[in-house]
Length: 524
Image: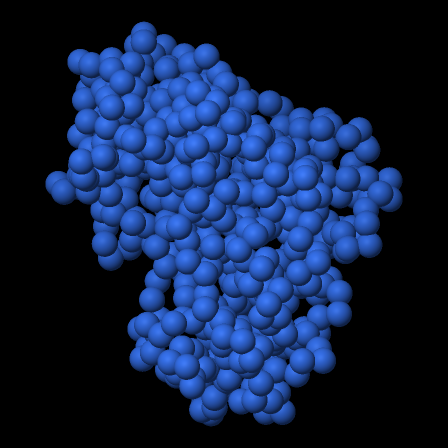
């Protein structure tokens, strides 16, 4: 019986490198890698050795005969990939090792950001060079989008954090949490990074949501998917949606990407099932009180051009006691009235666009005016979530392309106002590429950006710093009142796990920065 890759796949291709018969595709060298929602194991070529399962950082690979009822659909998902791609060959392949040029001694670099792109940059730097790496994050809890963006009911995807945690223990890696990069008396300026490091890598993601630009968008109950996901994933200081008691029992989501489907799934999942995850207590309490019965997702185009992946859609279909409706017409759906309290339903309304968000009797969101296939109608809703894309947040002192919402780069090298690369400054992941692709695409970009750094270092194109990285760590400690080192990070992690163990959950996250710092400082 062959092995099967499931929904939790992080697409980082670690399994590809250990497969002795090259039966996992697409590989990093093949079309579709980084844009494919999951990798796939050829059921014919697989020899059932289990090497891929051992190497998987997110526990997403299992023997087909051991899959639970919910995950058995991935047997067909894996098989259909090879039916649809008959040109994909399975067999032995030669291993090509990269050339590793001689680099200057005692190089010191900084990596800003601890999400997937930053984590894989650190991994590549540690694996391919002997540089000293200082890792910086604005929060005392590393993980970036993996901790604050991955849905609570997809715990396997978060397993990649275990790999990154091992890196933070490496003798050449120094983790500094709670350090703000930018402007202000408590922040560290990018120019100060350049003074202390031979190279700086920005892996800060794309944390700003795009606006709808429609009337009523500012009403209470109109929220971005970015803010909503941060709230239910326990991001410190994130505000939740004010859903009034006795409302329509319906949420309206503008967009049909994977994040939109994540939000829809969380909204209609039973609070009892979510209570076994690491969802924030504040979100669990509100979901229990408000009990959203229906979610409507608006897609501008048809289903064939929807932005979600097949795996994310199948996850919706597997929800118990939830009806999934796909249509291009609002007729007969009863969307102008409160949701039916006797059922749970997710409605995909394609060929639709939002025209206006309208208020209800309490001054908050009461619904929206929507055009579907040329006809205008009203959707009664307590919550409107925009999930139409993301853009980067400018960092004072770092070049930024405001039109595209990214740090401008060429092969990972940050471009200055002249259009020429800024020596020793790099950007990677969503911060440079835009918010497209998943963890696998970010890994590929992180590796290629580090390779550009290696080329620059070997060619003498780096401006060697005149200050020591150890001096920067002292500067950061004096400048940042919330600074937390690795021991403090581990203390927060243990405390959250202990809180979760007491109530039968994987962890109960802290939602207040002050609580995190109190735990970290007690350990220090």
